[in-house]
Image 1: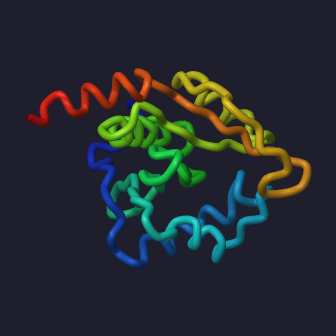
Image 2: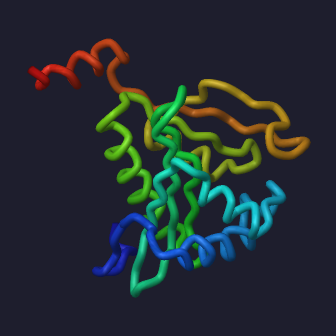
Length: 169
C-alpha cells in the first residue's frame, strides 16, 4: 500500500474533537450526501453507544474512520467505514478493512456490513475482499436506494466456537 505515509496508524479515537472533525468531512461527501446524512447525523452514527471507534491517522489528522458493533445478532458488524475524500484510492480503506476483519475474527467467524445500492465502487471493493451479498433492505435509509447486507465468513459458528474454547481448560 505504497500510498500511505510512514506515520500511518490505526488507533482508537479517544479525543472528543476527533469524531466531530470526521463528521464534518463525512457529511460533505458521498455516500453520506445521497443518504441525507448531515453533520449531526454522522456524528451520532460515530458515537453510538457500544461501538468501537477507530481512526486511520497521519500527521495527527484522522483521515479514515471505522465504527465496529461487536455485540448482538450481527456480532462483527462494520457499522461505518469512511475515508476522507483526499485519501481515497490510496490504501486507507483497505487497511481499515484488514484491521476490522482481524479485530472481528478474534470473536466471530463472520464480518457483516451494509453498502448502499448506488455505491457501486464500494460494492466492488467489498467483493474483491471476499464479501457476498446475503440480503437486500429495500428503501432502508432513503427512498429509491437499498442497503445491501454483505458477509465475509470463516468456519461455521460450531467449528469457530469449538476452536475458541479449545484453550480453556
